[in-house]
Length: 187
Ligand SMILES: CC(C)(COP(=O)(O)OP(=O)(O)OC[C@H]1O[C@@H](n2cnc3c(N)ncnc32)[C@H](O)[C@@H]1OP(=O)(O)O)[C@@H](O)C(=O)NCCC(=O)NCCS
Image 1 (tube, rainbow, N blue to C red):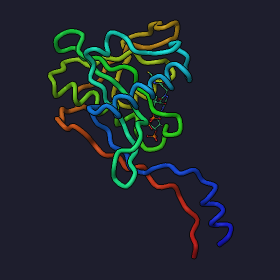
Image 2 (cartoon, rainbow, N blue to C red; image 1 turned 180 degrees about the vertical axis):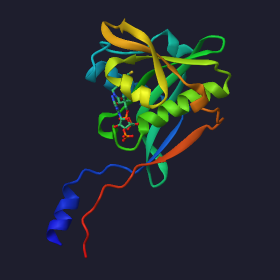
Image 3 (cartoon, rainbow, N blue to C red; image 1 turned 30 degrees about the vertical axis):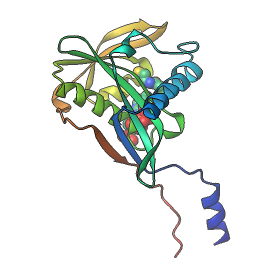
């Protein structure tokens, strides 16, 4: 029993419930920009101080937040979508906080919310410039490469989503439950 308690105590707490939704409130938008800075400035060093640009004036911000007691608590995922020309939508600044990656399909759900939202708003094409190390991730999510490009001095691919896989859902938010880690049997 002592071992079991020690084992549980040494495991960091990771929430099991997430909400993915359009960022509307000030705390959601503040968390969205803070996460983008953490990932694209501090971690990846793609930008120096701030990654904001002109697209942010018209883009729709989308977040994933982990929940405590059923309530959204902290922003741990971000993406934005915008429509540079009629019918053509783009996604960018996809980021999941490092502790929450490869846990419960948070990145995949952010992409689903991004593309399905744009589809519901009339998208006939949905495109993104994807860092090379994530091309396989997007391929598995029914995106195809339109060709290799260089962006911010880094290798990327222009990619396009298969819209038939992302039907419009018109939802403001979706919920995501992370699979539980295996625990030791007591008896
Ligand atoms: C890319 C990123 C958003 C993925 O988010 P994530 O929450 O870890 O992804 P998910 O958990 O939804 O992954 C879904 C599946 O794809 C896999 N996957 C995740 N990243 C992958 C990658 N780069 N290449 C291949 N597979 C990947 C996961 O293991 C998971 O597989 P499974 O279904 O077999 O379990 C995240 O790693 C990140 O924020 N990276 C830093 C910023 C960045 O690179 N942004 C994208 C710029 S294009």
